[in-house]
Image (cartoon, rainbow, N blue to C red; front, side):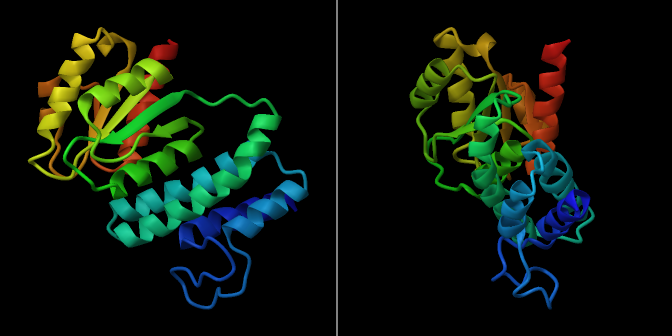
Length: 230
């Protein structure tokens, strides 16, 4: 029974169905339980929150990532699936806290000064939460000093910076400089992303990693986390 419901959670993540009112990507699903109802049911049956996350939510998003990379899915499809995972994580978080399960690490995310776009940042945040990280989103149009203050206060292992405009990505470099000036650069791994950003730009400003999309950003964080553990 547990395996069946986890399989259904995974399938509904792929279909981007938050609840029974969502038709999802495929027709004919309206009225059937979505990710939120299935997550609640799984918990009621005693299924471990970790199993729900690893074998349901994360496994589903891995398939979504493969479909996105193969151009079978597009941004609206990915957003629907990410929203379903986000709702499920809100349901699961209190149970994770009660069980004493520790997160993999902490990451602060922000869209840099002058930029109000948040779709990419929000997707990355949801995917990281689904992967077991504690995410603190400090918002959009965030001044370099405010980011520095968040790093100092939150003491995260990772900092994720997003920019969707060529005119605002320069503030990523400003933020890196502010981290150095405040003696915090060596205290945090910095990952950057966004439409105009590239691997070359990341290297030029001294960032630790670059994510072309949300899925790659998560892989970069996982890779850096593994390297730190060794």
